[in-house]
Image (cartoon, rainbow, N blue to C red; front, side):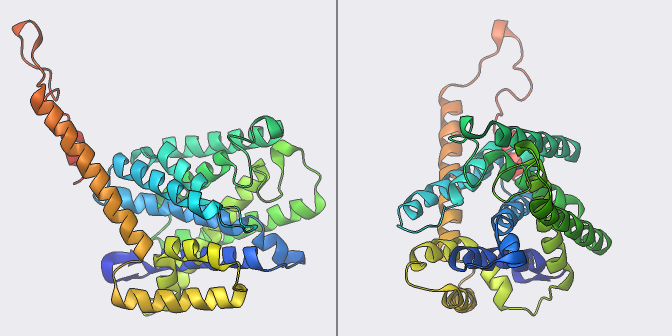
Length: 331
């Protein structure tokens, strides 16, 4: 695994690029056989998994839970205009955004609680698949909420315990590949109940486990083979929201090859001139502005209505300094 300017992890950017390109192929091609299985469900799952990896890196920087929640709301909001485009694409951004909001504090949890959450979400996803239409308006659909949340939590764990360790990356690439193969075999040969369904986008337990396996395998392989001198794929992976937002409307007029080559060309040129993609930059600036505004309002309210000690005693420790917790998280 290598890093490049700005301390971005090149392998993670390459894996994100693989997710973007695979999603384009899933939307604009009609394969069959093994290729159809690989493109059905796994690209979007990889996108969610790497979103969790990114949350882990955010938590290591100056981000706070408020940053994650606001960013999630903005990502979900981006999905609304895209969903109005008359295509067959079901936009994944609202589900990702809602998961970020619900998991806004998860990047600061202990790993054991993340593991418990991943297991609980996997079981909840299977239960949602079993209940079917009863939970579809909230938890179901092509991007089951509990499954996508489980993928993001798995990404958080991978960022902590796998990324940066070549031995663990190699092991996860192998084990994840076996889980992927098992998922595809179950799709073809096993008649499973809805709770354990293996088919993509169902949210069954086998689907969740296979998707996690596929995601960590691809991400690990990309981290193992990535090189800091690589340019095209890391740049595609560094501005995925911009490329996704362009892909949805242009899918009406562009085919798969034109979309992929256009994304590669645009990312290569844009990031040679600017530090980040336009949508990523707007998201970052808006998130910082909203969080700073709410923090200032809270500080102003604290100054206007200071906490007074009860019964003449001393104030409780930390009562008048509610901002210190966030200040600590900012590092």
